[in-house]
Image 1 (cartoon, rainbow, N blue to C red):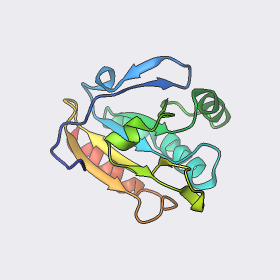
Image 2 (tube, helix red, strand yellow):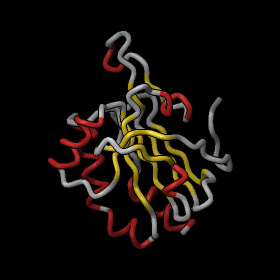
Image 3 (tube, rainbow, N blue to C red):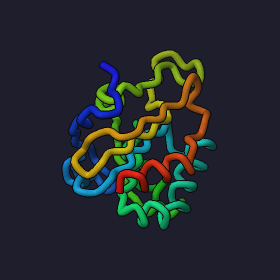
Image 4 (cartoon, one colour):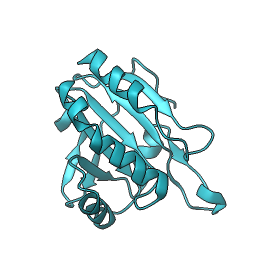
Length: 158
């Protein structure tokens, strides 16, 4: 089932880069930017996460929290966060359940049969957990999100 603007964001619990279980509900109360990405240490994903890092002041002005989600294991996400000094939580969807739940599972990435990742996608939630904005890379996860639009949409609900 596809999610739409106006829907309540499904709750989930995933491990973060420090192998601590984190639930979406703990981040609510403020706007939340969920940034799904295919994989750490890949060109476009590195650029995206670093762009979000470099935009943290703008997200802070909107009182928003940024959360990155990929299918990478927590150990990889820890190295990724360290290498790029990422100041936000990274969550490991290693079983791909949340990517499926949010309708952003990308199958057969790079033509590799059976290699399923998160598609590049952004969901902006208001403080109560209602989806206020959705952007999904289509047809290719190689497309970066419209950063200025994401920030503007986040500020609009703050």
